[in-house]
Image 1 (cartoon, rainbow, N blue to C red):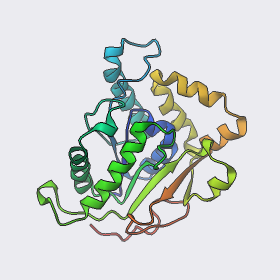
Image 2: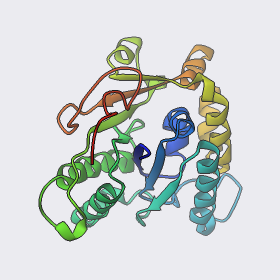
Image 3: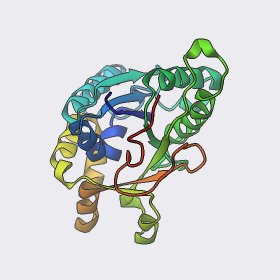
Image 4: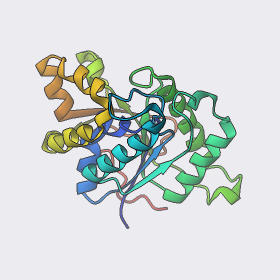
Length: 243
């Protein structure tokens, strides 16, 4: 049975900018990857590409193109509006995530850390909703939402370009993605409306840029992971995990 990875993020482009190399690496290794996007990013900047009212559909198309580049097998949109994720009905969004977790039954879930990487309110909110859903998913309650499932490993992607060298050393997982750097960049380029983010990257110091394209960093939730760990492989130690 194929390994399963579930990504839970707020907007189209989060997946490519934050962990495109990791996605490409594990997809190439045969991991089945499902991406949950809480919104379609419809409140972002149009970058001269479309009318504001068309932005959501354009960004959905960009995401599907990027997913094809990276090897994401499935995309699920939760249907919330960009910048409104913190005000989503809590039980409603947690229910949606619990149903997905119980259906996909992943060995690894990746989302933002508590700081949301960039501090974006939607990023921070999806972190907390994901934690709640992971906790809920394993309980013997609301059985019509699916068969309870205990998640082996919950990880939070860390923005290496924003962290000091000391902080990078504290990461539980450092994933080498240099082999997949070109594919990561190709996926980023599919998000044409995100020209501003690309330009900010291009202004970084060369050393930081090279690290961004060669390493991706993660913190493992030591409490919510039934099999927490550290190392260079997010699936290490999970080979014999049974559903």
